[in-house]
Image 1 (cartoon, rainbow, N blue to C red):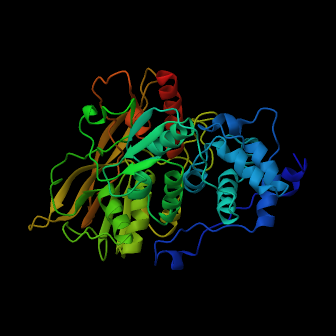
Image 2: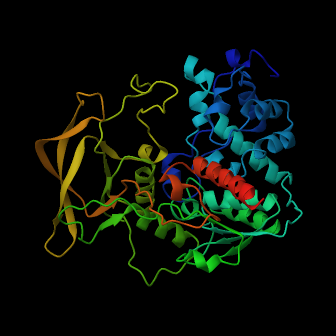
Image 3: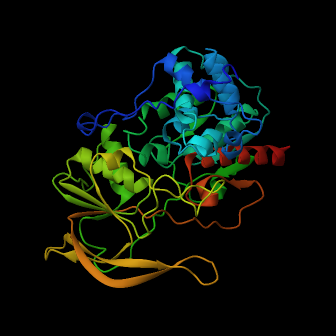
Length: 446
C-alpha cells in the first residue's frame, strides 16, 4: 500500500456520465473516464486490507489490492498482468459488472465510499490496449481438440482457458458474430461492440477458431472433438401468459434490444418486423437490468413516454437491514437509463393487455399487490388487493428474466458452463464458470 492514509484524505471520485441531453441522441457509451492522475489517486484509496473482502466477493478471485497498488505507482503494465492473471476479459467486467467487489470493500461498510474498483479495472485494460501491452500469445499444442458451443462470455472464457492449456479450440456460434448477450442483449451505450471485436480478434490471433451461423442440435455433430463445452446461455425468456399477450406491440425485451444492436452494425433487417419505440407510450414490465436497458433504448428511439412496473416492493435507498453483508444488498438502483426519464412503480401485477380493436395493444390492466410475510419465515406471499387501473401503452416490453435450461443426459466428455448450467446470472459469474469448466475438461482429458 503506497499511501496508507489516502483513504482518509482522498474522497471517492467517479468518472460520471455524459449529459442526458447529449447521450439520448446516440448509442455511444455513456460512462466517461478520469485522467490518469485522478485514477492513480482513486487507486491509492485501497487499504490493502488484511482480509480483502473485495477478493473474496469476486467470482473470478481478482487480486484487487495488488493491481490497485500498481496503478498508484504508475506501473500500468504490471497492473494489467495482475488483472488478467484472473480475469480474461476486464474490458467487459470493467464496463458492465455490478461490482460485487465494491459491495465487499471495507470502505463501503465503514463510510459507504468503496474504492472505484470497477472503473479502475476498465482504465487498466484500456491503457493496456492503448500502450500496446496486449500481445497475442502462443501456446504449445497437446494434440487434443475441444468444441465450445456458444460464443457468449462463458464460452469465450472457456475457449481462452483451454487454448492456453494447449488444446485446439473451435467455438461454434448460432449467430453471425461472437459475444452472445454481450453483443445481442446489452446496448451499445453500456458496451460498445468494438470492445468485443477487439478481444475476439486477439483470440483468433492466438489460434482459437470461430464458426458462425452454426445452430446446435445434436452432440453427435462434434464427434471429432475430444471434449465439448455447452455454453448456450438461457435462450428462453420468461413469458407473461395473460389475455392479450398475442396483441401487436407486446414483445420480449431481447427482441427490441437485439434488433437495435444489429441495426447499429448495419445488418439488414428488412425481412423482419421493425420494433421501435418512436412516438410511443412504452411500458416495461420487469425492474432488473434488462428492463433498464429497454428504457435507455426507448429514449434513444424517441419514445413519447416510458413507464416501468415491478411486481416486487420498492427496495429501500442506500441500506437494507434485511440484506446485510455478505448478502447482496437489495436496495433501490437508479441507472443512467432511469435518469433519462421514466415513471417507476412497484407492487403491480399485470392482469391483461387491452386491444384497440385492430389487434394492437393500447393499454395494460394492472393490479396492486401486497406481500405478506410467511408465518414459517419462508418466502413472502403475494396477495392481490383488488385495486386495478389501466396504464396506457402502445408498446410493451417483457423483461422478467429467463428460464433455466434443461439438459439431457450427456456423455462424460460433455461439460456445461455459464448460464446454460446455472440459469441467468451475471457476466462475471459466466466468465468464472467458463474458466472452471476449462479446468474440469483439462482434468478429464488428462
